[in-house]
Length: 596
Image (cartoon, rainbow, N blue to C red; front, side, top):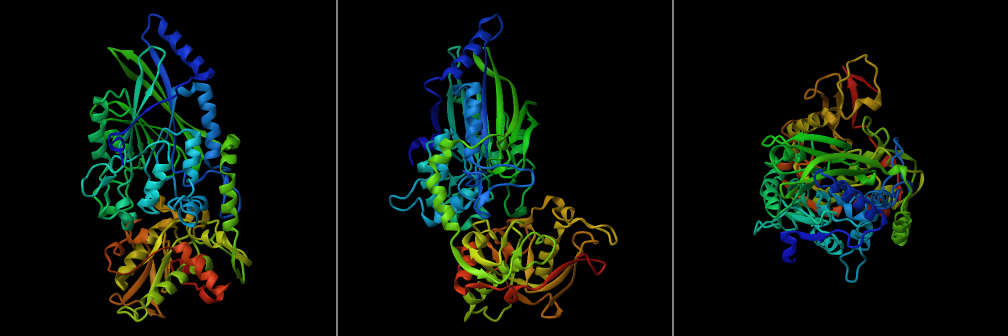
């Protein structure tokens, strides 16, 4: 990597101004001709958590993306919004940045990491690099999911991008120097002969050290966002930055899903604004929430820092509008405002859809390959509150895989349990032909499989922790399934059902006292009994902050994605029959009476 990657990339924006830009510059110049101070306005556009979405397409349902709110997704839509903003503001008065999680999430991004990998000799250019280059991104922060496919894939993607990937707190494990460009510096030409220097500082998530331990251990370390921002922001100011923007792959809530396993906060964007002087705005990512504008006062200076998080997958585009005034020989930020634009209000940019049409068609053909048949249709729709066959399929495949791996070894005699979550309520397998997209849709994440040793007592703690997911509902009170889950804002993927034991979850009881009649093979569970738990690497490495498992002894691990294991299982058997694996291991109750 060249020295510029460590010191930051110096980028000039817009050599030739289109007509709209000239009009914008002329208007700004006119405002500066009077007796008042010289002024300049510019806009920074931002996306985050694109997760491999170029087209407004759902590869798991094989049709145009849609949800309850009728959102649209993808960079082709974002491109249209960006073009409109550039036309209105003038290209040279804008910047476009991203806050990470770019190359994982759809079958399009998976295909070019695993099936036709960009790392192959004379391999393809990643569709996300092609699209972002064509749209004209100026910088992007690293997200935690950038590391899912390993550092080699990430480095190749970085090489293919015409803009820098930023990560001031992604450090080389040995030298503790930045492993990626910490920042980029952008020079905006004003009509007053005084350029504005805009610094973009990139920060990523410390949880990478846990979630992608297998890919980064001994290679990179990820210290906290606040400490690295405190190191770099003064440097950027001393280098002449008139404006400092942070692109942070970190939510704003101040919470962590990894508890005390790391000394850093996962969702630290608001803390950065509060604790580090000299920041004007923060593009927030990671949390998959929509925050059009959120102002945080810096504790030291009192300055308001404007935060904004556009909704994931290219559903929204953030606009930070900056107003600057020339005072005492330098540009000063007078005002910052933020808002989001909705991508469902525009058409896809044909330039982008045409550019990547061939890649899209290849992936559609790939995911529609038939790999087996199913004796009946199965759906995950009720998976968050009922034990459904589709989630049992995940657990059965995991348990069977672990049992086969442990056969003949020291732990072969131990019973194997398995955890699984409802990752997608829209997942399903039809009766009849089963395709790759059907099987892959059960497991949209790139998680791999591990086996950990736990005791009966630890399992009960684990289940109690998982059962926090349900809203406490008194016996006799009406039950609305739509309002029963996600207590404490726990997402579906952080609720685990365990396969291989039976138990009830009494939702009339407070959290911590809900697991009843926990049994194994028809007998009350022995707290001292040992089990092997088939568990995904996210959970095993601390994701969700579940108790015991991250510190439990690992007895086996696999590098292949669980979704591939499911696909291979279906291919090997040819037939998916719920009679083989479906069982009611758990149910919701109130005072012993089943809820459903």
